[in-house]
Image (cartoon, rainbow, N blue to C red):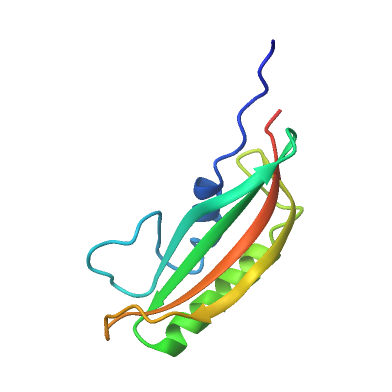
Amino acid sequence: MELLSPFPDIEDFALALLESAGPTALATPEVIAPPLVVIRRTGGSDDAITDIPRIQVDCYGATRRQAADLAEQCRQLVIASPATGFDHTSIDQSWTESAPVFVPYGDPASQRCTATYRLALRRVR
């Protein structure tokens, strides 16, 4: 049996895609220095050719407005990503599964907005 090539790493792709919005990370640090975008894959599916990951994007700001603005900037980057490529990865489709919403973080110096997106990425050939 011949194995297919691996799917692109959505977290690496999302880091590169969203870095123009601000500092990005794959884990929330103990001390947050806003602005900060934290990306994590939270599931998804595939059809053997296309990977359809679900990603959560947490945007931290010093104020609720800064967090909301950062979250909207990230949303626009994600939904504009189809037909773009990065490191031989092709995005066929992207959509907002859950639009940015304010979620209390418990630290008055850091406010957070969270959103969930789905992207369809083809295998590298």
